[in-house]
Length: 425
Image (cartoon, rainbow, N blue to C red):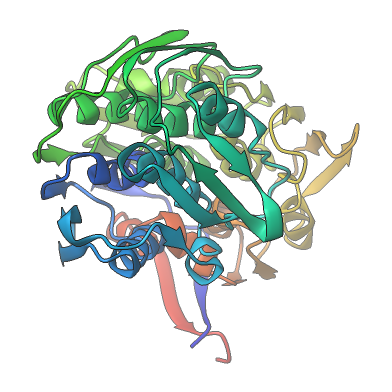
């Protein structure tokens, strides 16, 4: 049944909230369990639809999976297939991580091209470049990524033309099983890549340099099962930080890692919000009052400003004093939600091949019926609804459920008034 969120705007968020485990880290670590050849338990998992999709893929391959709300035990010993069909792969982008994992363990993989949010082109050429450098043959015929390494993978030196998060993860998964040493240069540095490296090492792998420009892997080491807890979700943390500032609230966010949030913190401080990181090693307090100032944002790979947070920030900037500019450098379709914000009274324009958005601050937004166009766009609309005068109905909240665990419940615990109901009501 299709559902919507109804938000009664105008409340100030106050209180304490705890962040869940990182979705993006989980999406890389769960396929990596195949490398162990033994059961692994992954803890601090977010209970979101993307994780449900990975569970279904694992079971379709023959793995035995047991699940609680925030943990998953995976036994890969009964896997009897290396094919991920379109029905499963189309549900999320991260389905392509099974290529790297299965290629290393089983010497072959056949995975339908992945789905996910339509935020722009996300080519897989760097993934293929890495697999081929390790000795695999790869084709993308008939909408599938078909990879074969009959002779076994062999370590190599690989230079990425751009620091692709997906390619970095996929090559790490394959290289962990390759014979010999692999060096990957110009890699992505995101926190969930460091988390994947830590997990590979916990299983007996040897990965060094994650979080820097160069990752070194000694492949072919025997792997074993383990229990591992996922890092906090960087993007959920940021979404809650922005929501606190947008509602002129006072929120203490626990279970967060302040060092992962430095780019966002800098922008909130520039706008006039208060951000305190000294309360504890795993907490951040965000406060704001009055009119906030405009800022300019340019998305960059970590540690720059995250592309996944520019959409939520656009809602906050809609009522900031002055004109803000957001330069989206990674995805060309990431400003589509601004059409929905305009229904709420936002003033914006997009130019330069849909990359640069100019947002003119208005005194207030008003409630309206809007539709989420992707995961982080949905989060932006939730924040806009919290800020707005009146009632906002958000449709297609399936996107929000892909990446946020019970977001409306967390916000309601902070004083928001949000109802989940049938889209027909």
